[in-house]
Amino acid sequence: MPIDCISYSETNYFSKLILDYLDKKEELSPFYNRFPEIGNFEAQIKEKQQSFSAENRQVLVESLQKQYEGFDVSEATLANIQALSKSTTFTITTGHQLNLFTGPLYFLYKIISVINLTKILKKEHPDYDFVPIYWMATEDHDFAEINYFNLNGKKFQWNSTEKGAEIDAVGYLSTEGLDEVFELFSAEIGGGNNADYLKSLFKNAYLEHTNLTEATRYLANELFKQYGLVIMGAQQADLKKLFVPYAENELLEQRSFENTKEKTEKLSNLGYNVQVNPREINLFYLNNGYRERIIKRDGKYYVHEKQIEWTKDEILAELHENPQYFSPNVMMRPLYQEVILPNLCYIGGGGELAYWLELKDYFEAENVPFPMLLLRNSALLQSEKQKEKREKLDISNKELFLKQHELINRKVRKISNIDIDFSKQKEHLQKQFEEMYELAEKTDKSFLGAVKAQEVKQLKGLDHLEKRLLKAQKRKLKDEVSRIADLQNQLFPNRSLQERQTNFSEVYAVYGQELLDTLFEHLNPLEQHFKILTFGTK
View 1 (cartoon, rainbow, N blue to C red):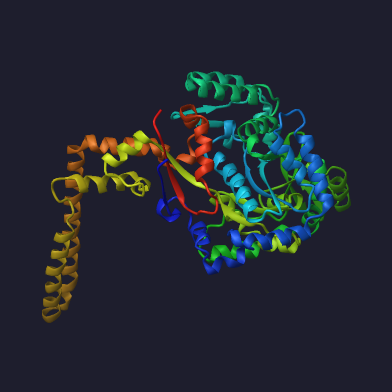
View 2 (view 1 turned 120 degrees about the vertical axis):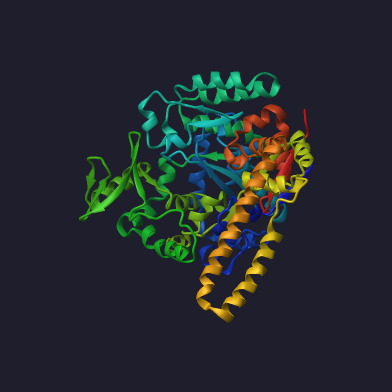
């Protein structure tokens, strides 16, 4: 398969913070523990091995075994779950929302990055085992972010009929109403073996399971069970019990707030956009479907917008008795993950890594090893036919990532039979005005302002003429302009990265298992480049 790659900076889609992190800029070194390079994993293994207890491993294994009850579990996944009881086994983790039918393509890229990294580490460290983990964000609360997916330029949206659409922990949401989405999806995806598989996958996931957590587990398990992926929710009481000491610190000392505010401020002072600002208490109370933040006021604790209050002793008693009711928010979830998993590395998108970079001091205050942070793989998938169109239009892979007006302007200038670049004329004009400035200096300096105004006016005039000529050429070359725009719109739907818009089913319907096989072959998480993959026509 033809592949190409460009740097993340050349895509123009990644933040300065992430680009500087990938470049290992010195000013960011205090914000992470070890950079994710193969040679750094040995030290990370030793550090995690010393801190993660056998008791925590046993709780984790038993919880995962319960979570998988009733599911068709592969031998590879069963072996990985059992291996977690050994002190020589570690995890590589990614997390994702419970998006309908996986949501955008990068769901696959995240999980494949994790699985591929475990394979790389096993070759490098054969005496250890490495387990790929997909952490389901079962306690996330924004239904509007997950209730749709895009297919063939159409939006397939689930309008939940129950009050569950307002449930704050979407993992508990009933799958009722998804039969309507299934009917629309089936009509759109058409026929053929690949389409039939996708219809079966959707039906078995969402119409045969009662809530979104179990539906998503089934879906991810069917796609990745042969690779040994372990899918976990973390809302279980036995896992939450391991987090009780850290939740106590949060309630009594506001430890996450106290130990992230300095890093957050430093990131801001360095000129980076801060992804998340911590609250004084970064815990929610999760019960009866709602998930509301806990507030401390005048020595008492309250649940926001609920008639619930506790004294200090009462809330600590509730925490110990019902730890499953206490849900970490975005600032505490990373710590919770690292407390219950023997994890070495978290693989996430740019936005995720941005808030992880605020947390190192907090981890140190809680004496929990800070994991390596690795940017997930990114890719642009194009067909052989699209590749041929691109080459015929003389568009490089790098140029595809330009803003559409910039791409069109560049191509129109290049293919026009006249010169639309007035740079030489502007340069000549400026030289003429230099002579006028010299003349004004020798005669009447008050004349300088008038000279400058005339120069600006004439340069603007040339700009205006250049734009008019370019516009006229666009009309003359409208067929070429249309083909350029159509191609870029196909590859960048909604003027965004394909991986953030397109559902995997759109590609799977054409290429089937070849899609996954190709991604596994070419997505190396330690190769920090944006890949362009070309699929042959079928």
